[in-house]
Length: 388
Image (cartoon, rainbow, N blue to C red; front, side, top):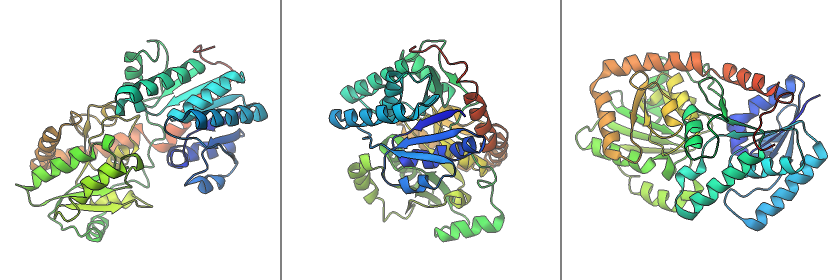
């Protein structure tokens, strides 16, 4: 029986992007293990059928003492399990998982890159992040990237040689459930908007995800505020939790718009599928991504998208067909793109249809999951050449 150990830093990542793939591998006869920090969401992972979950405390930020302790725990776990394959992702688990599995001479070490944290950092912190990426990559036998632009960026930064790394299909870490995320009926749309206090004539711009600086929340709020001056029917709906790393700045920023007639903050939602039904347009002006799942969810629900030229984002739509691309950190350009679509409902309707078709045929969850598992199967027999 093939034994695989996955590693991510926090349960949120595993619950959102990895859990179904782990269960499917177990169903197909793999001995599946997961190393993750025992923080919020950990208990949910313990219920995964056929998956053995191992608690390893890991701090997301740099911490020499804590990281050394985590590394020792990783080394002990790998020595105990002796897996054929270690698959580690997210910056801290990727670093610790790849380094420890190389020390313990695990035959196949797959570094799954879900995004480059360094793109959202500056100065010393950015250099530390890039150095950590280099260690993880040099310790890996294979590198998998979630999007083509992410792979290109890693090569531009000389983290990877030009002939190394791979993207599966058109990308994405887990695809989208096109049955759950689907266009609404007329009644479902009315109900969803009514719950948010929205009228039939409101033009609703939505966002689903972490309310974080590097998600472009400041630019989005600024852009919609500009639009509202001449378009009183504009509304902004923000769905999701405030990013703890940015809590002070983001909380202060959002507090200023809490009483604005055009802004609705719902906080985190257990089931976001119906949130998309209230939206006319989905906006994600992110500074960097691996491959944004929320943008796929929006398109699966038939919602056109405005996002940025940033890494990962540029792969997530078909520009001019399912949405528009703007420059990151540019609130004026974002405002202009939104207004363009507000004025051209025929284009929006065309984008809505194309968005649903694209996600169904290229990013269906079942298809992406099967592609990932098919990629893993031969790895134990034929690993790459990085860092051997």
